[in-house]
View 1 (tube, one colour):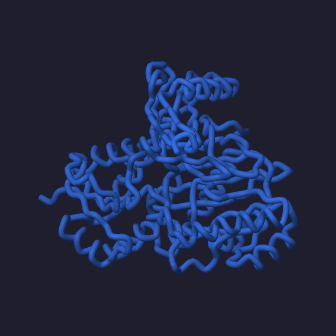
View 2: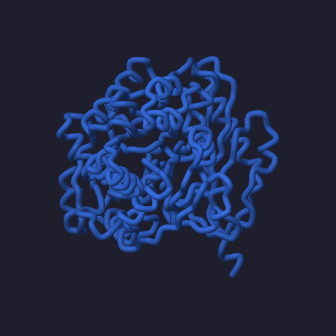
View 3: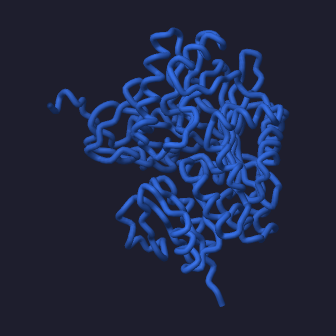
Amino acid sequence: MSRSSVGLLMRKGFFLHGDHIEALGRIFEEVHVWTSVPGYEQDPRFRSVQLLPKYENVEEIIEQAREKGVSFFVTWQETDIVLNARLNEGLGRQDIPVQAAEIARDKSRQRQFLQQQNTACPVFHAVNTMDEAVSAAASVGYPVIIKPTLAASSSHVALVHSLLELKQAFDSISQLAVSQSGLYFDDECPAIALIEEFLPGEEITLDGVVVHGRFYLGGIHNKLRMPGPYFEEDEYTLPFQGESNVEKDLCEIARQICTGLKLENGLFNVEARQNANGEYKVVEFSCRISGGHVYRNIRDVYGTDLVTAHAYGLLGQDALAAHFAKRTAPKCATCIKFVYRDGKVLNNASGEAAGDVRYRAYYPVATKGRVVHSAPKGFDITGLLSVRTQYEGPEDIELVKQAARVLEQKLDLQVAEVRQLQ
């Protein structure tokens, strides 16, 4: 009798994905991981660990997978969605077509797709040079948003009001593209940036799962409203604060995108922001789940287990997938507090916050000794704090955000100014 095995592709590591891996371990007898981060060779969660070079060989990985009895791969990492689709295609799977993953990976291709689907999105221009950026900004009209086409987590996204600010922001994106840091950019990028209209309203991120072509909503997080000039992620809250018809409309937008991409089985995320008239427009989407605490918080609030539903969908067990994708009424309120600092990290742990009943988890993203910078000097996340409180109604959302702010101050987090250490 063959053992059930799954391939996990996470080139940049999986520090924020302990819950996700635990879910796979409950379903599959063997989890085999492919990563570029060393040090996990003895990790008991995995049957085997394969270290990947910078430039991976698709055929070699497929051969390794077949030798291990792996019939499909999963990933929760934005930078791996195209490689994941190619590997699955090589194994005879079409759960997420390669073309769909390529569209989702590139924001300029996303916008072209959305226009073809008649889905509302910002007015935009894809640019590859400073001259193109200047022309595009003049066409859209200042202030404009400039963002990299292949980055994530709102890194290097800026609201610019002048030619000088535009040049500074474009130079920053150009440096990111040339460095190829974070596995964001490669040599085949046709356009490195988007110039687009600024949407001043509320922003949300929606996560769900597609099982055998059917879309299931997991949850819609409200985000802290950021007016610019930078758009660091912060204060993701559940349950969704919006009218039920708005939730239905957003869910229908996600469903239409998944149908247009021809997704058969896959996790899915879409982000949208309101214009001045309160209309939501899609700013980006991807064939993966949002990172960090999003998976756990959706599970805590609604009982929806997106990772497990996805796994059973890949196994062809649609009834089980649908069972884990079902939603209940909200059981609690949650908030993800993104922690930003500037300087050298001396200590980064949960500290006294962990003793509070509202505390859920803390991910110390920046390790001891690392130098971190918040916008505009950098876009480093120092930590991710998740809290939860009782939920009776919309008024409790402000309470859970206040709790997150209080517990952030109780973290054992010490950062020294770099100039003090010289």
